[in-house]
Image (cartoon, rainbow, N blue to C red; front, side, top):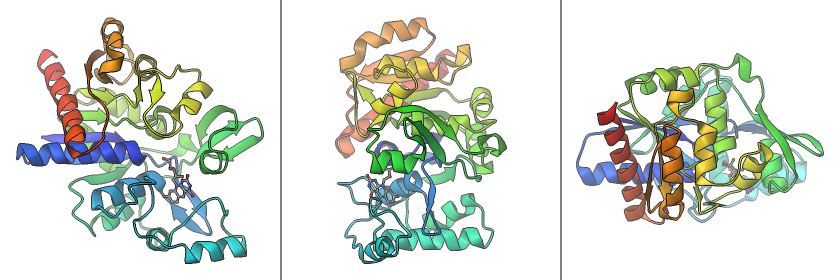
Length: 324
Ligand code: FO1
């Protein structure tokens, strides 16, 4: 079976580790592919930084800083302090020395004309990830945030301002010229199940769906599409998705996020939606909207709970597939 996950960042990394653990425990030969958000990416000191990819890469490789959720474990910041001294990197964006190795390698390959998809392949080849990572698109689609103080790159809004600056909207730069990567299109067409990770619906899932042609690829996929709510009992599990959701007028609730994604029958993307038991009252209204929801324990605390959430998402997808 081919399992495809869409998302990026810390929530996605934890979820994909759960899918990988579930596959390992089931003894199956299921393949796991991840269509990764690139809207967080940006240029710093002439280097291309890809946060949502690198969080996944490092977490699946087991070399991540589990506490922060980004960057490498056992990090030092000698070069970063020099970059701040030279003024070529913002002092509020910490670039560890090991992490800079990744950015330098990625940028060197990009400057040689290598596609982002090929960069992902080369970076992933270094460790046994148990999953294959594909950029949503090979073109640059940096997320720009419209705020009360003008347009900011997502990273400045997110890291420097901690999403505290009221956001009026989000857009991906030059999105109209972007196309889904070949890898993303291939795995979506071959998928037996497609899962939306419990990532930030606006800045991690949104930019993937915004790539022209991506929604169509999802729409024609034979696989059922099941999302996992990143909102539990009215609160976001991690990060500041509530600030993003408020900016686009979506209530921070498991039900509202599912309705934001929309049911596939009504031109949206979801066949199914996994909510936490605290949100069981969302199940019936979502069913009435054509989204098969199910309430299960949703906290990704450790390997066991993450594998269980992955199992539950795949079970819902299977039940939907049998009904279709
Ligand atoms: N997040 C922070 O809150 N502070 C940082 O200094 C920071 C540096 C950083 C460097 C490389 C990288 O790949 C990610 C980094 N992040 C940092 C995380 C990143 O800004 C966001 O977490 C993601 O883009 C949101 O998913």
